[in-house]
Length: 371
Image 1 (cartoon, rainbow, N blue to C red):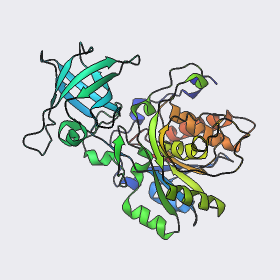
Image 2: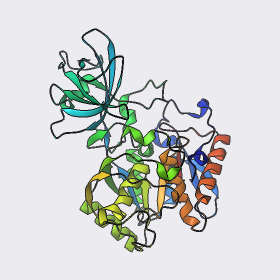
Image 3: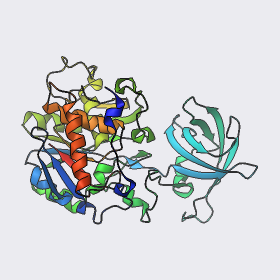
Image 4: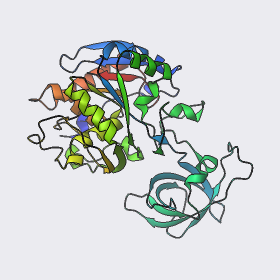
């Protein structure tokens, strides 16, 4: 399948620069896969589409202050974006860096965040160890960096958000707990404590998984052929308690509704790779069951994939040519087993309707519920 099929035109005016307030006042486009029917609601109405016995599963990973600033001994300014911790101590990381002459051996002194509440922040030094083929760097810090991120780092907003003026906490879900992501699982940004309580009163269950979101999640697919794209690896975990709840929901006839594409990748890995099953072997694992796991996940879901864990999906509107758009297309396509491309066509038609209706796109934008 050609990657160009997942391209679409989006004028910049559609990209949300500010989130809706309150969180659940964002708009909600409801898409029925089997009929293609669409309804327009508010996110606060989502309980009207969920049944007693359904189970929502969100990603509870918390965004770290991954953007750091510093300078070389010559005075040149440097920006460092943490991507992935490479050792147990927190000293060695893979990073993106911005600046001149940032080759192996260069040392960088970090500059404290001006908003830091600490009067005398820790000073750390960064040394570039190697330059990777992707252009990112392996670096070492003079001390483990995690304890000092609050005073040295900034919460990194996506590059297409250029005018946000609010609190950094607004880019975290209300249920975020373990730190580790460099980008938010944005489908969860629409939930409020009041909405979660209302859903619980309706008999809708709530569980969480953890997937620490990497920056590559949002990068466009550059391979001309979808299947040739090399997906990135992220850390994820699905507990035995959550796996049990998911399996019991399925056995009882309830629906497992993933909150966001990161939850999808975690749940579906629990249904495939965690059990030693080839994700694209459509003859394997005819039942729906997930297994607990903890570790690296690199599941690339695109049309042709058969979902084994997820029955419904809450998601935002995604970037053109992104792996996330392909994942959602594959989910819509589950209603059309004889035509894997039907999901892409139906989803992009829904995007055009969303544009015509004035929906807001990407991380701070509006949401979709796909059933």
